[in-house]
Length: 298
Image 1 (cartoon, rainbow, N blue to C red):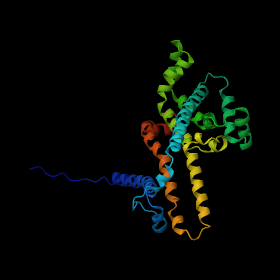
Image 2: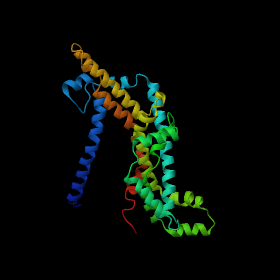
Image 3: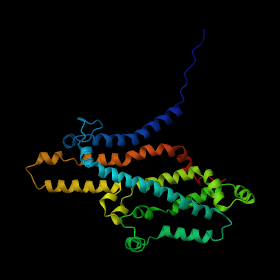
């Protein structure tokens, strides 16, 4: 007869798994709560507070936001163009600058590194920034006004420079001996070897562009060119103004409590965050490795 094997519990693994399950719930529950509140009735929220299960199911917040769907679709289009074009241009600018600074045979790399680092310590101020963008670059009501101000990133230049510095110099030397030019070396050799750091910086820049609204506040006056985040903020301000006006009508308590305020805020968060939840898995395989760039120097 076969003897039953004794079940051995690895309490260390059980503890680690339990910890990470609880940690995952810390991140999942707020997202679940946002979705549930966005599907709840405003009257129910006022009376009973927040709940993880919307009872009854109510789509009033989404109906309010999507009352004019073409406006939302236009803002999604503007945000998508701004985010993906901006992220690609940012990667090209940051990677080329970082590669030059990583080359030891570049004569001016120390001076340029000091100049870039100096810009991290001091800011020119909002007024010179606005004058530069409007009077000299003329970015009003253009995609350039949404992309250009967020294009660079000195911290990411230094991050990529560290990664490029860890690549073997013999690869570049061999390519030069074979007759490859600098552009060929960069795009055919360095870029394929740098997928982790490129994916990490690309994802961060993509999220930065997707969540940006300040540039639209400064440079965009055409409503058809509002990015999603700024459009949702304008809609929320309109709701708050209507609610303030209704506070001066004490006889209309039911209309005041039914006005979707909290549920609209959560619905806006769902509409703003939703697309990025589908983008992140494409970067996930490189993201964890890219976060450790420069942590270990061989």
